[in-house]
Length: 418
Image (tube, rainbow, N blue to C red):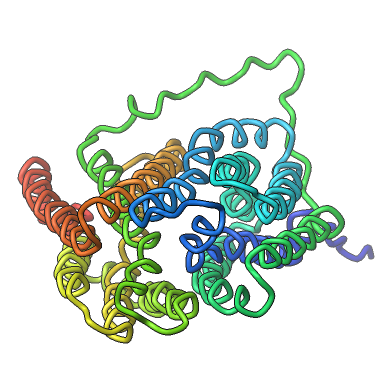
């Protein structure tokens, strides 16, 4: 009597937990490195020779947005190369490139070098987005949702921790040494990715087998209005968030706040902390009452909370208001992704979510540029008011579009996934 043989576990099943741990660590460290400069960016710009207050604010916006501009332009290229040569290779490239770029930023001698090196960081980076794809494709299907949730938690934790570290380290070790330390930590990510990560080989097309015809994403989507609406909303949400971030340090300086960099880190981290705490709860609420309702409600709440931020007199007031706004912002991007996912066929879901990420990058580029320009030329309160009008207008537009989609499908909002 022969004993039944147990199949050997595949490389995916054998190493997915280790790969996930490396990806979470790598995404966390690279996001921290990207966000830690926010509290002291205007001070670094001033240190590099920019003296006019309006120019400091404007150059801060340019320097911060530069990374997202180059990332948006090169993301499709890295994605295509990852499909061809492997996701692990792209993560090795991103971690090593980020380690070099962050260290070089600490050596910048003028504002033009800073902007150029921020462009280089976006060009060479992309670890978090590459890690998301690797985890999605190299994890057993039954555990994919949990694994992506863990990775998302690592990314949000990086957004929370980065500004705090950026507020604490420069007074202790100096601005330039902060960049060198960040580069060293990312180099550890490079080593972990190189030696610990195991990627399952991709199946190759057999010789003589015809290549499957390419599917044009937009041709297979029957109703494009929800998807197009969400792409615009994704861009405007990130625009609204990032238009405020680069001016917070200067705004606190005008409020005569003590220990400006630390307080700026607290203000920025308050938003991220609230988003981490609220994201899962708002997601459950959206599953129960509908994603469209939740997005409209969150946009409205964020717009209302922006008004008092323009008129605060003490730093603690700004911390509290940004925390409350973070609660509203926590559910926006997951709900936007869910609406897109429910509005398109499985065959093009990944591509459409990729377009959503590109739209968010565009918002991350235009937001700091616009916020820096408005804050430098018209005053800080104007940035909050203009952002309030944008988010309020976005909520009204979604409300109108929701009515059109509901009447066009003949379904109630709940039945139509609206």
